[in-house]
Length: 214
Image 1 (cartoon, rainbow, N blue to C red):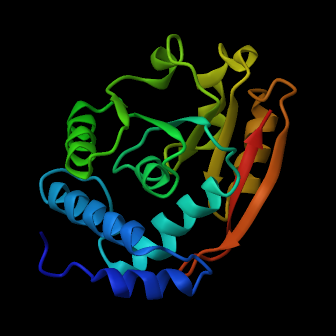
Image 2: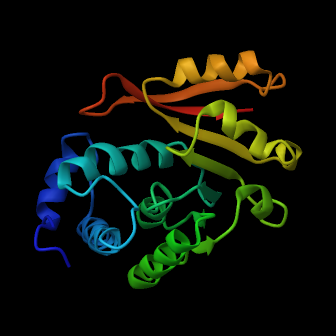
């Protein structure tokens, strides 16, 4: 465990600034997640957020704003999960959700599997592209954060729109520019983007948003 790892009480205090109230077990689980993630990060690049402030202001805040929009019992696929945000945090904070992590880079998928085992989370990890996973995996919500521009993402789901699942995108301040480029390129194919949540992330020049593509 990193000697620089924050204490659970410090995490709760930092989260409360954003109106996020963590129980002791939730704070302890988030702390354990960071310990495992940051340890793996010394071996492979999983995250740039390796301080209390960056974890709370970006990873935790984004994840909480996402799960506020999810109905109880949702089957959630975190696409391009990387270090496990928002999927692992969703599983910690909303144990009613059924969470799967989709990560096509084998080494990252191995790290995610180990982290989930350490945290004893019932989260499935899939080392494959989302286009392949959704051929066989039942889902209600596919969520994508910090993976690719909107215009690149939309075609990944082209064969799966009729299966009833929703696509949610966590985007930064350039979301309107990305969306306009996607519409101009024709990849939207009459699909609609709906802004369903917006929040300020400290250190960002503009708001973060949650978009629903339907």
